Length: 290
Image (cartoon, rainbow, N blue to C red; front, side):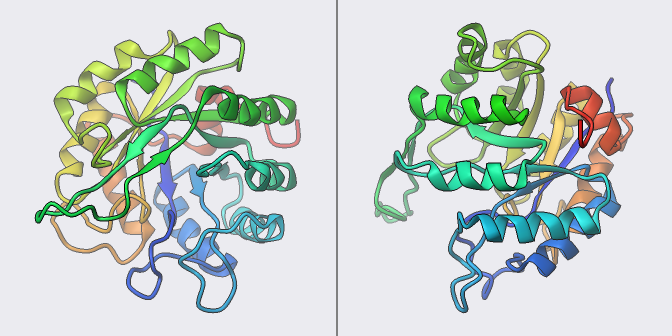
């Protein structure tokens, strides 16, 4: 099988840094990225946090913040691939587009369809007011138009089986070109469950020649599915955006130990861990500066 590309999801959205060990500042992001890079991650999935005092739990779409964070990561991890988030709720995509233009990452996440974003408590109360993570085709098209212009590789995040199937339609409609990359997101309460049996079915619904990975959200239950991903030939992702727990159930103190555990999944499946250059070849990325 191909070498396994390891992606580190460094920080995520809204997690309170006063309660959890998520990085916020450019220096913190760079330090966490370096630990993950040294453990084998060739891709850093980057969310941006507000740099205002006391607001580190809030997202930012300030291009200056994006530039500071990405420059710090690139300096700490020579040759690393940056995958910048674009996820927003609502029609206004000016912030993500401005950040893409400023930092010009080699790859960027592109949420490929809409989802009722729900979670319910044991007592029947909603954990938060029911909401829609809206990603209609016209919104996806705006992201892909800029990615095509700047030669940014889209990684399609798929929260349900119908969204997986939609990516093939986007390709057929000419909305993007190149190697299709799909990210099967499992563990969101109202999306696909973190289930190894379901995972085994999903690649058949991806476009021909696609590269796929899994994003697994949860605790101990995610690690057998990471192992199944490795055995099926998928690419691997974890980080403090997705989990705070190691395979043995202990809390992770940072991203580096999570990527170490992910690398063991690849090795247990008889696969090597991809270098950044190997990852670029597998994903069809342009060489930096090309």
